[in-house]
Image (cartoon, rainbow, N blue to C red; front, side):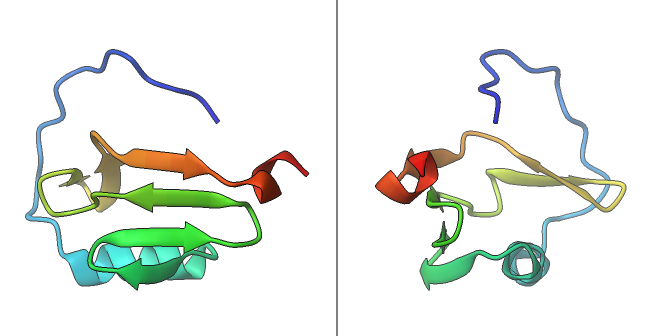
Length: 77
C-alpha cells in the first residue's frame, strides 16, 4: 500500500457508474457497509467517501481520488 501525495490530472473518458465500483470492490473482498463506504474484513481496510466525484473512470479503469481509508487491527496481523 502506498500513499500518493501528488497526482497528475486524470482526464475521464466516462461518467463513473457507482454500481460498477460496487461490483469491482465486492469482487475484491470488500463489503458495502453504508452509502459509498466499504470494508474488507480479511484485509482489515475500511475505505470511505467513494462517491462519483472521488472515483473517476478513464478507459474502464477506476481512479480513486481523495479516498478516506482506515486500517483496523486485522490489517497488522
